[in-house]
Image (cartoon, rainbow over all chains, first blue to last red; front, side, top):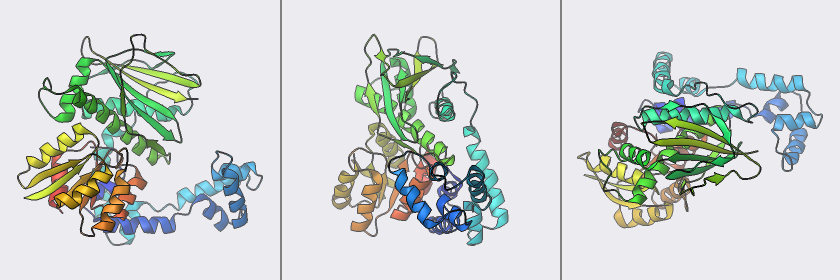
Length: 288
Length: 119
């Protein structure tokens, strides 16, 4: 039901053992050369060049390939050549399991089809952002996964309004907030009315009524939902080789005048319409 | 009846897991730890057959706790239940550290029970 990669799907379903996956990952680590290792093996740079570039990375937030180009050690054609060679020779987990005899080719094809079906609900759909937002693909994916989880986890129908930038995060009953860090830095905020908070709690607790639940539990359910969405955002980002770490969620009770956007940040607002009179908004507070 | 210890900072998630486990007929929840440090203590005091543990918790996180649990008790059976299960390196790290399986959130109750019954 969640975003996952093929190896995890196989273990979760009991198709291959954890020992088989550990062995296959070890084989991948042995065969799939990192950028620097590949560049050295292609004779384009020396190990000493890689050491110098690694040291330069301490003071510059750049990828190894880019820093090698910036240092004049590698040209752009060679950079692309290394990336292409990495892609062309990449040993995927399925092939690694095949080589180790944990799966037959027929089983691999069959389970790949099952995996594609399992993950089909999470294939990204286009979400339009205002022009000029940096790392737009990640924020589009974040909004898209939020919408999908509203359907799959909460079982609610929704209508998404067009995203726009705001200078104040509008007030609401409560917000769940999670900080995202790594290749991007942002705060994910899910803002809901009291009615929506109860809808979320019903779905998370798998209960028909939450009228007798404490405020703490109701808030916890909203945080848990936001946590599940962001965990899946991190998973989807990792499939694109981007690292996103998430901190445990917190709740915020915004004042009537809303929350101002801090200097140096861009705030995207994604209004989400559920039932009449209830309000849900996703805010992404992105550090510029 | 197998005894299960739940480790999760989220009260709502713990409630959901407790319900699934206690309704299973062959597993029972023997306690709730709110972080990794509590899990290590309760593994000693409650002696569970299986530990279901979150990965992303304040204080001692799930992977740090898993490392300690396996060091202290070679027979411990831990299933990580986490929204971060789909992050490739987190998944493989958990297995390498000794987790028996990793279940990604959101999940179906039947997936959780199948995993517990395989242990």
